[in-house]
Figure 1 (cartoon, rainbow, N blue to C red):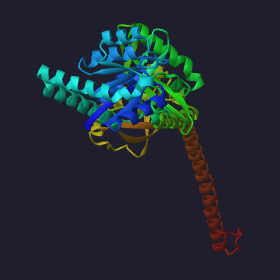
Figure 2 (cartoon, rainbow, N blue to C red):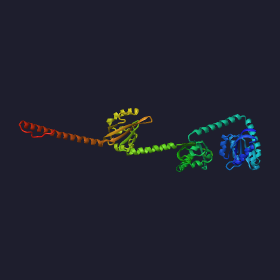
Figure 3 (cartoon, one colour):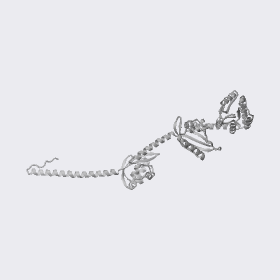
Figure 4 (tube, one colour):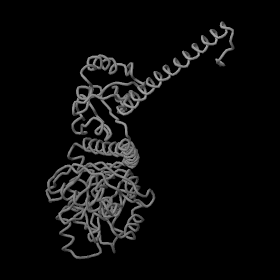
Length: 448
């Protein structure tokens, strides 16, 4: 009994495949696999590394002559036996001329072990005669190991590593996809090796047309395909995906992309949350009556809300990116500011940080006016930034001045009134004393 044969069957009829195995099993110890498409046949030629090919002459989408041609292109020494249900001698001659080592009619399947034995011996002798048997074995093993390593590496990559092929007639397929294809589209790689249509059923309806258009544009211009899009999956539901792929134009007019698709659902959800918070913050700052300003470590304005525009007269476009203290700080304050700011950008500290102070500002019209300033520091990417909240207190200052004048006036009036009363009491006392001295009664009753 011969050992360790690896037989690749190109056969669409499972019954014929099982019959052939049963006939061979008494004579040989072998491993086998069956395919019925060209793409799967090529993949097995590489990964299964057969010692012998047995191909059905006629199949719906593939035939024995095509299998024979592909085999000879892959390995000229790899023997091919043609199986057929026809007894047409012309077919037999055609197959033998194309390079088949034998031709077996399915009605005479019992002759198959003899054909396999003859084919195996011819292959062995051919390899020995060539003289580099070991080299071929080593190269095939290296190739197998490389493919195995590539498969292991791609399976570890988050998302899916893939090849996508768009044929000239508009049909498409994924000749290769790592097992991450399930996580990305909830389809198995073998389901789309010849037809990619199942993947496109997973695309969100609102993204389908855009993605299809971008694929054809990438193919037409041979430009990088790079898109974010949504998918609707049976188990995971709505998810976000990011795809980047480099196209290659093939001789037959097809385009083959080498790419990666990754899951960006969490990132998109985080982006949505961040955008919502930014919208809320924007609403708050827009509604605020106080000026809210942010400056970076170079002293340039990075944020300027509508209240700041109203208070100082400068639009956001006029302020953002400018050194703010050269615009809204009176010249008498600037030298002191520059000294304090140098210390701030190094430490995030300053005499006004965390406090509310009264200073002066200058408007676009050049008008000086009092402001109440609250400062805080923020650490971003190893740099210190300052946030200031400013309130125009001109009206409050005017009110305080009027109030002070009124209090002073009241004090003066009070002093005058109290002094008059004291003088009258003193005079009454003197009159009473004089009357007493004259032996008369006191005239005035005095309460102190």
